[in-house]
Length: 95
Image (cartoon, rainbow, N blue to C red; front, side, top):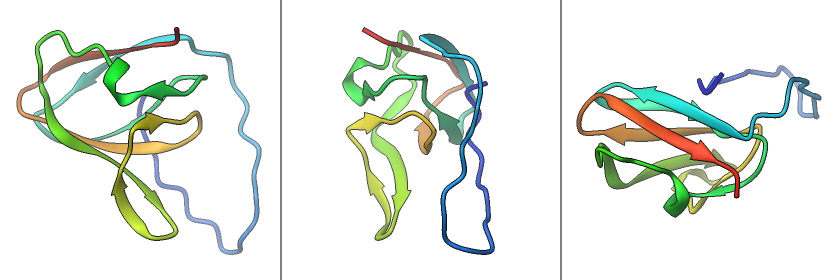
């Protein structure tokens, strides 16, 4: 839970993913780049709890049709790259 994954599909289409609802999650980040996922609800990047300020500002990226881009919101079912300047924990919570 909380890890991001790349999934390669041979053909364009959609796939359903099933699991339990997750309203809060503590993620352990390593120094450097980390691939994470969000929780069951959208969460604004500004609402990520980063008590030790380990996230490097402006380094949360998603991947879409136009390649990598900074995001303002973590969406359920998506993966994101985030850079940390030190190892530590962040907390994602739905409002």
